[in-house]
Length: 404
Image 1 (cartoon, rainbow, N blue to C red):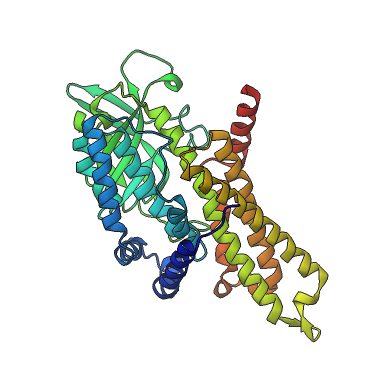
Image 2: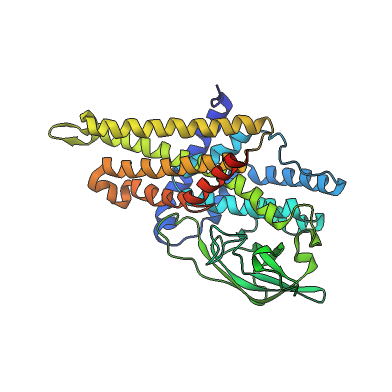
């Protein structure tokens, strides 16, 4: 049975110390004062040598791209557990940090490095992997959330050697502050083909381009540590060097690229959920042991014990999902879309339920920000929405079962 090794436990201890010393003191700034998270994340990269590791990883990826070696979706990961430990530990205190980090160094950087030419990788990919620049991944639109690919209206029209892009993207993580935006758009080739069936192209945009507007951060229910905003495109002109792969016929098209990213993103939500659940269980057990009612700790009451027991069952189940994913990843196995969707569906619902139960155990104090379960509950709620709503996870799972 898989479990954290002694080395992993040492990493956990070091990450927790960083969280306690460098993140918890700044929670109010992240939560209530609108301070962007990027300097905290960059400090984490410096302290743990993650920038140097990213540079080495990029160098290997670039060498493979230059040599013509095809990237494998099932390559053996060096240590997927070490990669997920920071996700879990950061989510115990501020899940928004993980969302911003994952979109910039994960979705945006990985899309460029997978689909781009060597020159495009060097131009944009490295700076995103090292956090020297902030990245956004723009696919969602006001009328195409769950139907992101089919309902997309943002268009790219050829004009000589350039493309003219028009449209709007919304709920874009890092959108207000992104230096680099990976953007999906439908090709408008004048053929009159139904918009739903048009080819999806992937572009890279730079902050400050004429016609590109990055709106101010939205006011949200939770995950205040992750700035979210809209992106507006009005006759944004780009050359072919901004089209990933510099071809409209890449080996991996825009639609498949987006679907591959959905798999990674949904599996990652399970690790995020585990961090939230673990922290809620820890806080709730400690509170129940010390909060007294009618002269005895509320932990002595059976209804409180029932909630604590159900929270622990959820923690074990989600942990086992994450551990199984780590073990399979270490052997090069990649979850199917249905498996990743199942992980996300269960884990996100469990995180929301555990956080809600934690508030109930805390009673009136649970409704007050300083007791932290209030923040974790707000932060957990979006896990059932982004990367595909609960309802879309059900569809993905069912379709896969029916096809098999």
